[in-house]
Length: 204
Image 1 (cartoon, one colour):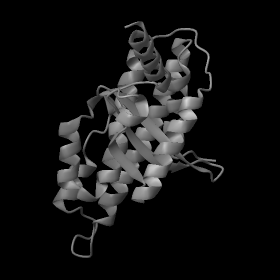
Image 2 (cartoon, rainbow, N blue to C red):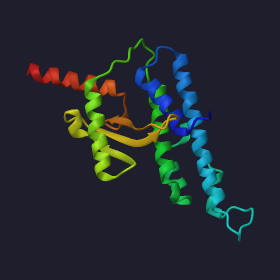
Image 3 (cartoon, one colour):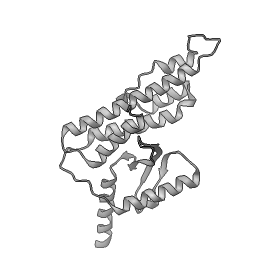
Image 4 (cartoon, rainbow, N blue to C red):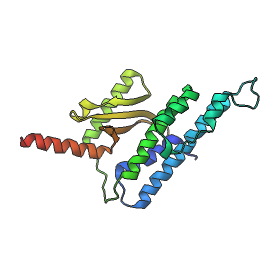
């Protein structure tokens, strides 16, 4: 079964959150991101093709042509490129949001250390995801960009890009990219910062 952009992104997220114990693990994460970006580029191209009307025949209107030939390599994606895409295709905002997440994830994966790591379940993660889900349902939102999570993380400057996705088994869940002071950060690292600050507060 062919994977979707969301499924490739989830694969990269899981590798990143688990931590890298080898360069091969980082490579697998980069490959997953590249597949996701390629599929998102195809989504942009699909919008361009949809904009062709009877008057254009097989030709793109100018704005669609400009968007079609953009370079969507993740290492080049930034706010300027996002603005450029949306100036051509305002209807591609959801795709631009996903490119934002992929580019941030790519940088975080590139900067992540390769160390022996073991994934452990933290009950705080369960509570936080429950709170985010309740907020999303209250807002009737499918995507939140820059969601303020200050209160859920003990006052830390944490925000999140949150997106409902459906996996290959038909299960819908929330994917959250956590940003600590503006930098994409693994949840376990944020919890470690919280624990350190709690210990410092107790020692005062």
